[in-house]
Each structure stands twice: as structure tokens, then as C-alpha cells.
Image (cartoon, rainbow, N blue to C red; front, side, top):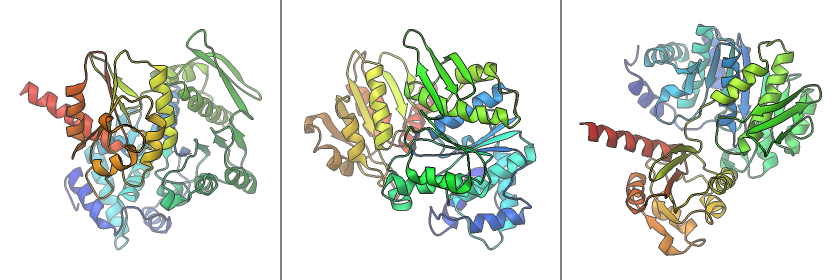
Length: 433
């Protein structure tokens, strides 16, 4: 084995390929072929692509599948605190030893072929899921769809969540162009669910070309929220569920995500997964968990973690902040990557934030606090903005400024949330020691 520990493997993978992102399936397909794999995995595959709502949808699908008694695997990215979070079976992250053993098998098979960090992760997930003989796997596309490593594997059903402008340098600068990339996860004759009421024409047209049954929100399935209690209703052309429990994820928009998930469940029922009954749906919705999506930690000062990093996500976040009012002030700790439209994010949130604490993210893709300020200051008064050289310092300043009944919102990137969660863990360890 090339390395003995997971951190060693990951550090090496980060340097192995000439670029961090290198779309295309030729290299990963050849390595998988050498490992004896094929495009058709020996279990049911649900592939999830989109700009926003992917993580929530994967979490709900997995929770419902597990509640029904199916041995369920998930592959997601990026992770928050530990790499192992990416490769999960029945709610448990795979161990370092399992992942290292898979990396070794991939390394032996690839020989002279260079691979990216993400490609290693994708093959490791497929390799482990095959060896563990799971019943169903929910695979989250990393970026785009058509050329993403996850698209090496044929989906039995595809779910495309709401599409917004993100990763425009790679995917295109319009919803139609991005929709075309997302539509790449479809397979001929296999069902696809769109959680948007009006998906891009590129998705509709691609489904027609492939004769893939397309189910669109509002047209092929509907939902309504009961304002008098905490339930909601869902129906399709031949199935109706009344008074379902809302998902255990914060926000009304999660019901919208859940509605698309139930259409996927409905299609899987028809394909033979007959244990997916109402009881499994209810239990799955009530038990679903997902870190970093409006994750609240109550106290004299409430802390909220959210990985929102684009305009559509920021609009959802704004609605949530209004939906859950705060008696005091809202302090925002923000750090973002340089390929994100920070100005659009700030425009969506400027009216619900009292003070901004801008920090810098490390790494080549990280944006400095000063650079963030150039996009925020044209929109808000300078006295509402503080700039720091590290996001952890921004967080400390927010903690010092916050009073009882205030709240601190940490958002802008997975890396931002990870940095502050790790900082908090270290503070706890320091107190204990």
C-alpha cells in the first residue's frame, strides 16, 4: 500500500493531478474497467444533480430508504468535518481502513493514469458499495452532471433539483447551458424528476430525446402545506398522501425538496421497491438529519451554520431568517470562494443582517475579507462591516459583539462552516484540558 493513513492518501491525491477540476469520464472509466466494474452497478442507483437542494434531497431519500429497511448508501461532497462523511452506508461513515483499502485497489488499477481527488473519492464509493452489497445508493453529483465523475454510473432514476447560476466558468452562464450539463445524468427510458416548476428547456428537450419519463413539479406532482398544523399533502396522478409530517429540516422550502423526493419514491415503488410505504416515508421525513443546513445551536446567543454560497440559496436563507425571527440582532460571519457571486448573495441578505464580519478563506480558491468587502460595501453602510484576515477571527469578533437574544449566522461556503465548527471544537478541548 502506498500510504498507511487516510490523511496521507488525501494529501497525495490533492497533488497528483495537474488541476483540481478536470471534467471528463475517459480516465475514470478506464480505471473502473480495470477494476472489473461496469457502468451498471449491481444495486439501484439514484443520481441527484442540481444547484441547490441536492444535499437535503439526498438526506431525505436516504432516510426514507433506510426507514423502509433497505441497505442504503450515500455518496456526497464536499464534507464538513471529516472526509469519511462522503461515503456512508446506513447512516454510518466508512472507516479510514475501508477507504484506504479502496484507494489502494484504485491506485493499483490506475497505474499510469492520473486522477483527481474527486475521481478517487467517486471510485472508492462505488468500490465499497459493491463490496458491501448495498440495496440502493444515492449519488450526489459534485459539479454539473454530464462530465462529472458520478455520471460514470447509470442512474435508475435521476433527480434534478433547482438550477441557478453557479460554477459558470465550467457549466455556462445561463440556466439553459447549466441545465444541459445537469441533464447529462439522464438515461434512455429511465425516469427523471425535476423539482422545479419551470425547468430549463434543455432538460425537457433532453428527456424527450432519450424517451425518459419526465416528472415536473406542479405538473406531474403537487403539494400543499397545511397552515393550521405542521403537516403537508402530496399527490401525483395516481397516488395521494394527506397530512404528512414536515421534514425535520428547517425551512418551508424543504417541503418543496421533499415533494420531489416523494415523486422519486413513488417511481421506485413502481419499479419494485415495495417496502417504500407511507410508514417509511413518515419515519424517514421525521428522522432526517443534515449538518450545515440552517443548523441551529440555541443559547443566550444562538449560532446558525449554513453552507449557502449562491444567490438562490441566499434567497432561501433570507426567507428562513424572516420565518424564524430574532429578538435581538443578527450578526453574519461570512467567508466565500472566489468563483462565487458574493455581490448577489449580499444583495439577497442585506436587509436581514445587522452587522457583517468578513473573513478570509485559506487556499487558492479562497477570497480575502478585503475582496469580499468590495462587493458588500456598495450595498450597506461601512459602519455595519468589519474585515478580518481569518474567518475564525471574524467569528471571535462576532461572539464578543453579540448580546443575549442575538444570533450569529455563519455562512458562505462549506469551508467557512467547517472552519468555525473546528474552531469551536478546539475551544471546547482547550476548556476541558
